[in-house]
Structure formats: structure tokens, C-alpha cells
Image 1 (cartoon, rainbow, N blue to C red):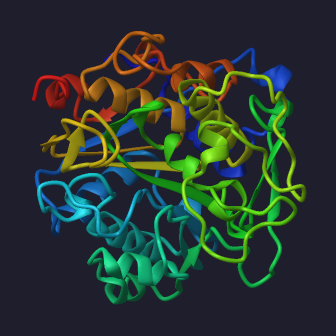
Image 2 (image 1 turned 180 degrees about the vertical axis):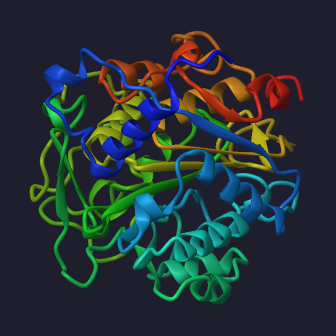
Length: 384
């Protein structure tokens, strides 16, 4: 892969990302799609090698301390469906969820780098328990070990408003593609550094799952899910963000309606736009993608013909678009592909929409790859 930015330019880009300056005016962002390097490391199995691989990538990206020392770090996990869903009887972390060992290693490295507090966040879509700890425990995660990985580790089910009993409003720069703003748990804003910890896999309504699509789980089901009241958020756990998928109804009156209620109701139109809205409204400072063991053809075992695959890689980057573009190429797809071409057969390209929004470039010629070249670890997800 050709290298475009030099090391000094990269470090300047890291400083911009850490400062959250991707919240520039939409008129400016539309003119320039920034770039930043992506680090790729081989990691053939879960275990002690995960922390070693992650540490090496973080060093290549300029080091964690400059980003997290003395700060509150929020990590959006990538878990979906029910805690009891299984593919071929395997634990979800070995198939369609991010693996708990990748989470634990990340927390340990954040602690070592001087992070003041680490918060693990997720909004489960199918759950009868209220706390995130209970949900993850049902899936077999070692919650006690994760809590002990750092001095100050917290968990929060962000479907609920949290201790403040009040959601916060995430405004989308430029007015948004589907909504002007999304009401979310305050933990997504009450942090200094925001990390998206995702799984390397395809997605049936956005083409790929990566750092950006992981943010689709930020809006609470208690506002955007099925069974929510007409006036206020639900006080009990709801399911499936149907309003964001198919738009059959609007959120409660306490939240903003979508910009155009007559826009297409197709998930292939809506899901990519919600994803880009959220990535613009809640900038990702560090993207980490678990590609050690994963699945092909979709995001979960409810998708037909899913198969397991072991790419044996980890990716990390300070720009969510460049990281997702590298992940797309690693899966054997062209990041420049448009709707109708794999992996975007049934949806608009999230990468294109994000590039047009000025969030980052999807052009591999403008992305420096550190560590292992994409061609040496590429796996054709449609042929395994």
C-alpha cells in the first residue's frame, strides 16, 4: 500500500482526532475527507497475544498515553441480538460479537496508559435484564475479570437514561441525513475519549460492520425501539430499533422526529444514513476491530448461510472511515464499491456517505497502512 501522509502529518491528525475537531462546520467538512493511518496486526488466536498485538498497534499510532492519560474513556462494545444466540454452538465472541479478551486487553492497556476511568457501554436489543453486567454474564463473559482489568471500570446499559434520569441530545453537524439529533444516554458525551470496539464482519443492511456501524447501537431502544410510548421514553427494556430501520413510526414526542417522514422507508437507505449521522455527532477517537475469529455473510446467526472464518487479525486507527475502509479491503471487498456491488448489494455505501460528510477518506491510495499489509492478510469473505 502506498503511503501518502508522513509521520508528522499523522501525529497532527491524531491530535485533531483527540481534540474532537471533526465537529467542524458541514460546509468545511464536505470539501475535505481527512485521512489517518490504520494499523494491522496478525493475531491467530485469543489469549495473551491479543494484548501484545494491540500494544504494538497503539504504539504505531502514536501511543495511548497521549490520547487517554488522566481522561475518562468510553468504549462502545459491539454485541448484538440475544445473549443466548449461538452459531454452531460457539460463544458469540468467537463468531459475531467482539471477544471479551479483546475488551479486557484494551482495558488493561488503557489503565497502563493512565486512563482515569473506563466505561463499557452498550444498548442490548434483546434482553430482559436491566444491567449490562447481567446481559454479558448471560453470554458467558467473565464480567468480574473485566471489572478487575482496570482500577475504575464501569458498565452501563445505555438503553436507560442512567443516574441522571435524563437523556442527552446528540446534534448532527449540518442537520443530519435522517435526524437532526438523537437522544442518547449521557455516557456517550460525558467522556474525554470515545472508542468503538467492533467486529470484522458483513452486515445485511449496511454492507459491513465496523467502527461506524457499531454506533448504530448508541440510540436507546427505549426511545427508538418497538413498544415505546407516544410521549416519553419507555421505563422498561424495549427491543429492535425499528424506527431507525423501517421508520414505520416516529420517536416519542419528547424526542425530535426525523427530518423527512416521506423519505424512503427501506433499511438499506436508512441504516447507512443513521450510521453516518451518529459517527458525525459522536466522533470516534480510536477504532479497534476484532478480526481474529468472526463470521461471513451478515451480522448474526439470524442471517442465512452464515459461516465461521478466522482471519487472525486486529485493526486499529484514529479515523473511523479509514479504519473501516481498510477492514472492507481486508474482507476482500472494494471500499469504493457502490450500491449493487458487494458488500453493498442491498444498501447504500456507508463509506461513501461518510466520505461525502467529510469524516474520512475511503480511498486506499490515500491511507497509510502500518504493520502488516492488507494483501498479506486479506480473506475473501464470499469464498471461504
